[in-house]
Image (cartoon, rainbow, N blue to C red; front, side):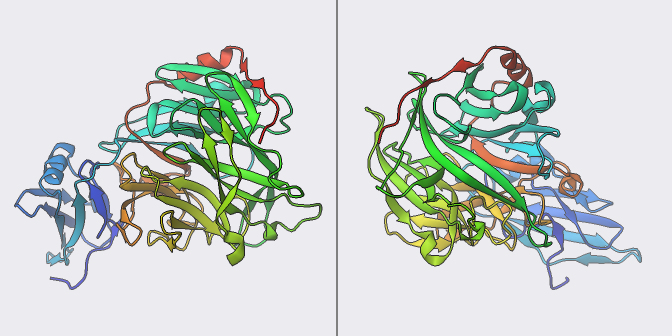
Amino acid sequence: MLDREPVIDPDYSGVTVPGNIAPMNFIIREKGGHYIVKALSANGVQLSVKSKNGVVRFNLKLWRKLLKNSVGGKIKFEVYSKNTDGTVSQFKPFFMNVVDELIDPFICYRLLYPGFEAGGAMKIVQRSLESFYESSVVENQLLEDNCINCHSFRQNNPEHFLLHVRGSKKGTYFIEGNRVKRMELRVGEMTSNAVYPSWHPFGQYVVFSSNKIVQAFHMGPDKRNEIYDLNSSLLIYSVYNNEITPCSIMDTVNTVYNETFPCWSPDGNHLYYCSTEQPKEKFDYKNIRYNLIRKPFDPGSGTFGQREVVFDANKINKSVSLPSISPDGRFVVFALSDYGTSSIWHKNADLYMLDLSTGKVSWLALNSNEAESYQSWSSNGKWIVFSSKRRDGLTARPYIAYFDSPGNMGKPFILPQKNPAVYDKMLETFNIPELITGEILVGPRDFARASERPRLKANWVGGKD
């Protein structure tokens, strides 16, 4: 036996997986003319696969049996390679941990090419995590090639979500069950579109940031793009009353803030978001740094209290973006980078976790040497999905990690595919992965029909603190 594990791609050695995950297919990156893989549970269930080209694909039915018999333990993988001279090499076995906390059965993400200009083919896709079934939710080819973005679910619910469409079919599309409603939310005194959304857990409110977004491009090879806000503010939309209102105008007498990336606490009593002083004329974007802020909220009156700094990133010369709160309300995961509004093009962007009960901030072991961003939680709080550019530094891929505590997390694994070579062939990037508790009931034709209907205009209500 060789005293090393085989090189496999994706690297699934040592990962922690749920008991309902799709087959973890992989490629053996070792020389050989023939391969045999044996996957064994602790109680003796065995699954064998033969391959001539190193591509290992497990039968779905047999894989599920293997998973069921491995929950609470490990799957052992033995890999054998038959060499061209007829000799057989056996590699050191590797293992996968299988836990009894299930993951939500579907994941939803946007697929687009990693360019910077508007347009181009893009779609929002739902994919089963228990199999390889996938389907398009909305495709921009049916919407005159307009940009589709910023999908957001209410507490992982596939029957309550929204997304934006820009251009000739513009509007915010609200989905309830199998119905699609097209709304116009840029009304009244708003100078920019509603952009980043967050649903109140009770469903009667959505908070949006209204952002004037600018792109800049770097000359050096290490950085490609810089995305930042000239100004941004928070708005609250009442779904039941069809009214949109500024959340705040000025929190102190002399300071105006940029506010973006809103996120509700699971009990609906606090709104978290990222904030920095609004930049002055001739500002240096490298000095833009956001802190994590929260405000108390009264769901009955729809009003907010005073802002409170939860994590002062500026003190350590860092910038917070994209906060996401665990379903039990205890932990906040956010991306932290050296500066700027958006972390997705910052190579040094890592994910950190704030324990709201202790105030302790921890760097998460799931990070890599490339950008991590767009993290979100499973409905049971045991899994975190996030985008990572660790494979090639350019295209984001969805990774999943088991969460037990900030100091006890599973090694992250890339979303398994029927063809494990797909990530080498795909040019599209995976954007905003979200775990959902079931299948979305609407499809591209439903959005196309909704785009032909007039937009329902929201009512503007004056500002209030």
